[in-house]
Every structure is written in C-alpha cells, then in structure tokens.
Length: 215
Image 1 (spheres, helix red, strand yellow):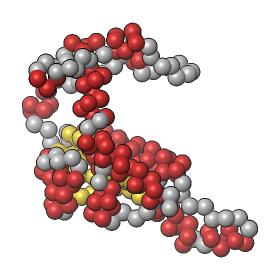
Image 2 (spheres, one colour; image 1 turned 120 degrees about the vertical axis):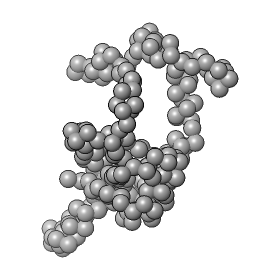
Image 3 (cartoon, helix red, strand yellow; image 1 turned 135 degrees about the vertical axis):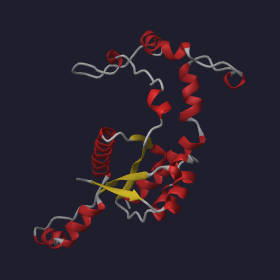
Image 4 (cartoon, one colour; image 1 turned 45 degrees about the horizontal axis):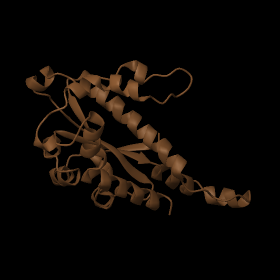
C-alpha cells in the first residue's frame, strides 16, 4: 500500500490545478478531483518512528532510504488504485478522465498539496456525470491484440506491421494548413505530443522529482 489519495474539495485548489495541469478548465468544474500519490513517506516515517535506526545500529547495518526502485513500486500501487477507482466510479454511473499533467509543475504541486520528499503525484483523475452526448460518442478504436500481446518474449515491430497497425488512423489523418509537411500518424503524434511544450515541462518536472527523491 505505497499510495495515498488527495481528495481535492477546495475550489481554489481546483482552480489552480486547472491552470497548472496544462490549462484544462474542466478540472475546475469537476465535482470530484482525486490526486493519486506514489507514497513512500508514510512507510519511511513509520520505520523511523519504530526505531529502525536503532535496530540497524545494533545489528551494524546501515539505514536505507527510499531509492528509484521504491518509487517505481509506489507508482505501480498508486496507478492500480486509480484504475480501481475508475472502475468503481463507472459502476455508479460516473465518468472519469485521467490527467497525466499532474506530473508537470512539480514545484507548484509540491507546495499546493504539501507534498514531502517521498511523495510523487503520479496521476490525477476527475470524476463527474457524463452528458448524453458523451455517453453516445464514438469511442476510439484500440490496436489489434497481435500488436500488443506477445507470447513469452517481447517482440519489436517492423515497418510493415506498423503500417498495418496504424492503417485506420492513417486514413483518418486530417488535412489542412496545420498539417502541411506531415505525412503520417507517427509524425503528427510526435509533433503534437512528444515535442510539445507540455512534454518538455513534464520531463523537466520528473527530473526534479527524481533529484528530490534521491537527495
């Protein structure tokens, strides 16, 4: 249980999150906003309160602090909890939306949510009742499982497999001035996501989180 949840009920905090999480106003309007935290702080504090330093000294071994592996494990726990919450909410007729942008603006979110050293906001989920239009909208198709599920060993895909995998999305690639020079889905997604300002900020922010965690 290496996770915690912050239930954001303060409208002022929602308003700030709507701005800091890549300017998404619907966050401020959401009736329920939960931030899922990878949390090793609670266990570390408990170890110290339990006299771990003293017992380690008696046994002539060093006291270990949380490291990268502990962070990864805590992230897994927190994301499992988030997905369980989404499924539970759906059973009550609630819609949800993951907000990965909570990993951006580390310094802002650390202050806003009072996050200590060994706590990392790995994900945020906003919940609400979907409109009829949202319920009836066409959902994005998923990749065929042959490109996702491998037996026994991982397998890298080749060019022809990528062509097949992205064929439907390629046929739906929009046209227009904003798409000038863009020939395929890979280029479009890279420019829209990976090289976008929010991705640059997210990578910077996560580096700062790792530096803080490993101090």
